[in-house]
Length: 126
Image (tube, rainbow, N blue to C red):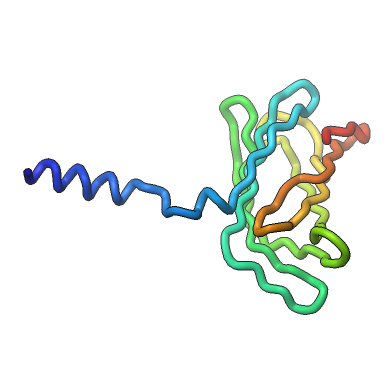
């Protein structure tokens, strides 16, 4: 019985809180022939002063066996339709040469990639 209780306690401590994964999107991209997984997670309740929505975002970029994570507050501009923001990230940490420039959308509590462009070369990724 004691082992059962210890196993249950361990499982509970390792469990991801319900709803934590609900705030994440995963977007597979192909960048110069390399598969890149982008995970965008809203880390806290957004704040909306005026026509701006400030979203605490945790972005994880993974290619092959390399990955890195960035944490930032992204300022989305509101208007008609979803709120949008521009974000750029250097991909050298995952072994891809260049900078990925993204238009991000914030809608329904989630952040997604609307468009992505790689420079140099202005290569359309999405």
